[in-house]
Each structure stands twice: as C-alpha cells, then as structure tokens.
Image (cartoon, rainbow, N blue to C red):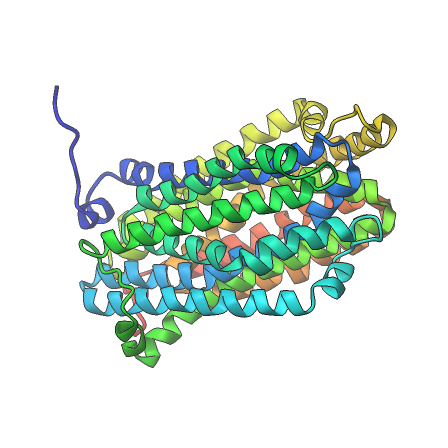
Length: 467
C-alpha cells in the first residue's frame, strides 16, 4: 500500500492540482463550519424541546450579538490571515510573523472592548434589538454569559483559526473549532436539563456554549504555538509592536471591510428581528428558526470560500494568473451545486425541518402557529442560497487579493442599497411574507453587482501587491 503523499504548504498553494488543493483546504473547514452550525442549532433544538416560543424568540434576538463576535474575529483573522498568505507567496516570512502576532493581539483587544460595551448597555441594546417584556429576561441571561463573559475566547479562537488556515494549517484550525462544537452538543443537555432548574434552559445553553468556547480557544492557542515552528505565525508581543504602519494598513484594508460586511449582515438581521417582532413574537420565533436552518448551505459555502482564500491570495502575490482563476471557478461551481441541492431539500421538507426545532407538547397551539410561519419563511428564503454563494464567493476573492475598497463597496451596496430597503418595502406591501421574500430579491441584485466587481478586480497583465 502506497503512503499518502505529504505536500509542503508552498506546494499545496502553488502546484498541487486545483481541485485537490481546494479539497485539502476546504473539507476540514466545511466540517468545522457544519459542526459549529450544529452546535448553534443544538441550542435552538434543546430550547425548542421546552415548547416555549418566547425562549426561541430570545435566542433570535441574541443571534445578532453573537454574529458581532464573528465580525470582530474577521477584522484581524481574515485581514491578517489574507496578508500572511500573500506575504508567504512573495517569501516575506519575517514580515508575515509580525503580521500574525499583531493580528493575534488585536483580536484580544477588540474582544475585550466589545464585551465591556455590551455589558454596560445590555438592557437598552436588547430592547433596541426587539426584546419584549416576555423575552428580555431570557435574552439578558444568554447575552450576559455568551457575549460579556465569553466574548474573548469566542473571538480569539475564530481569529486564531483564520490565521492557522491561511498559513496552510486548515486541519488544525478545523479541529479546534469543531472541538468547541462537539463539546457544546454534549454540555447543552447537561446544563439545560440536569444541572440547572426548570425555567433556566436558556441560561444552561449559554453556560455550555461559553465553556465550550474556552476549551476550543485553549486548543487553538496550543495549535497556533506549535504551528509557529513551521510557518510564519507568532505570538511574540515584540514582533507585534514591530509591525510597520503600511502593513498595519494592509491588515485593516481587508479586515475592516470583512468586519463591516458581517456587521452590516448583523444590521440586516436586527432589522429582520425588529420588523418580525412588529408583527408578533411568534413571527419572530418562526423567522428565528429559519435563520438557523438556512445557515446549512451558507456554512458549507463559507467553508469552500475560506478554503479558497489562501490559495487565491498566495497565487495573486505569486502572479500565477491561470491557477488563481481556476481556483475561483472551481470554488464557485462547487458552491452553486450545494446551494441548488439545499433549495430542493428545503422546499420538500420545510415543515418537517421546522418541527425539529420546536416541540408541540407543551403549548401546541402556539407552537403549531410558529412552525407554520417557519415553514413558509423557509420555502421563500431558501431561494436566496445560490445568489448568497455568489456574494460570499466574490467577497472572499476580493479579500484574498487585498481589494479592501471593493469589498467594502460590495458590503454597503449588498445590505444598504438592496437587502434592507427591500426588507422594509416588501414588509410594508406584503407583511411577513414580503419580509421573507426580501432576502432572495436583495441578494440576487447584490450578486449581479458582485460579479461586476469581481470582473474588474481580477488581474490582467500585472499584479500589484501593496506594501
């Protein structure tokens, strides 16, 4: 039996056949995305076993705050990771170490600032996000534990995973993130139904999530330190402080648009919650279920895009035109196939899927109304999956090439010009069904603009690596 061939990180990025290289980088990332999606869904699943639609609505409200953790991790994880991969492509490993160290400590600082601000303004923030008298107690408990106490390990673990992945250590990054997901699946029922008393299920879910994030973060720091012996990764504070201003600008030029992209996505979710809550708490709970379910194709497609990013970044700086474009095409084709498959499954099994997340045993009338809303919303919103893939794919391609301005422009147009205005218009005209329809319509318009931007951003005869 022949031994499995082992490639260096440079070979993986530069010479291994594109489908194989993309599989090597993307599969571990997809697995970790799905496991983390499962553990996010597990919170909703176990809370749904209570049959309490108000608890479910509270988790929908706090989802927007949790997504800010992801946005902050992208600020330094993708901003720094993309630059690390490009510097590896030009052989500037010393500078790459400085970038990675700066990004590591930047993630620590920004998470502490965010946690402090949320802690100070928690109650008014929850009211702004749509919390009612029936849901604010549950939402406060979850946000206090997961965001205020658990922000640092959550942001740092995701940032460290991005840096590992962009240095070629996709498997280690995925193991760390997956570990947190698996632990959460185990700890959720223990804290929700065994350790804490009845009525404290939301608090139990929050405690389980935070403990899992701390353990995941500890592993990723260990993996990061170990990978530093082979790759240009560092946790040396002196190297972080040594990074020059032009390279800090390069980190921020990609990191800030990436963070703003998710912050705007979060803003759109806030608007969804506010409009849904304006109908009633059951509409909010129903659309909250759908916003978790529809993350399945998004998780797979984001995994593909994150696996693609370092290959595109490396070949952009190495001036390998054909390999860069082949990588982009291959990733897009794979993502579209996943998207259309998920549309088929969601259209066929919308009601069955919604029932997984909410028991009808406690308050059957309320639960059935919530499930009915969720089924309709899922059949409408799942149609956005292919065009969402186009938007994600384009954004990651531009981030890989250091096109911060184009990434930022796309983010603003996607959410502020198309999706959010369509949301308010269609909700006004067609009520809750119009609110659901805003996603495929807004994302479709944004995808056309994204393809135009990508066409303009692809390299011609020369590459320019900004320094």
